Image (tube, one colour):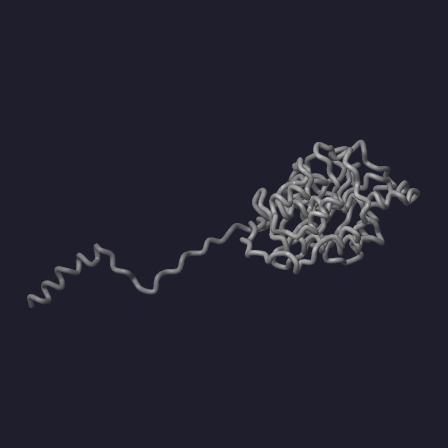
Length: 317
């Protein structure tokens, strides 16, 4: 679905201002939170498969989960974070994250420095452990759902999506928790590969560990082991038939080398600055500022030529 500019939601609490992107979760819009006068991101959930949305009780449980994440006041999660429904459509609201998504942080197919890449992954591991008491309902770790701020070297996770497994079913079947954790390990392995190579794992035919060794032979072999065990892959296998890893997040994290064991990162060019949000409709016209006048006039060739007869007459006198 597409929201028109000016669409008001929740009795005018949110007003859509512009379309931003279509990411792994769904379409994202820039909107104004009118009571606070702040720009936020507004995301439509379940728009690609509306017929597969979980029941209303499970959707309300997900919105309650977002409030619990918000109450953690953890710097890795966008604050405020929430959700609501209107006219049968599911929406998510989240604060504008600082920085840029990882897939827009560098030019296409450009690998990131090793220490920076490992630092980002270890920050994500810490954030996932902070979420463990609440669970990881529908969380995605794709490159467009992890934002990075180069100035502060911090990340923001935005990939909270409606879970595919209804909350009641997950509560009744505790055995699904290891499968959810194993999927996060897999996504982390793919994310680490993306950072170190600039290539998406799903577009790579060779096993990730083999392809990384070919591209980055200077890296410690610990990383090969983490990619191999975290994301086992057979040549030609599809995402549906590839085996899942049995590693926990803590087990996989222990496979990673220490940051000090990696080659020193070279200075990186500054990423492209994200454009500022458009002006609010109430903003007045721009004021033109006149250029300052020079302190003293500069003689032009014409003015110098006119002064020559005067000087000649003076010398004649």
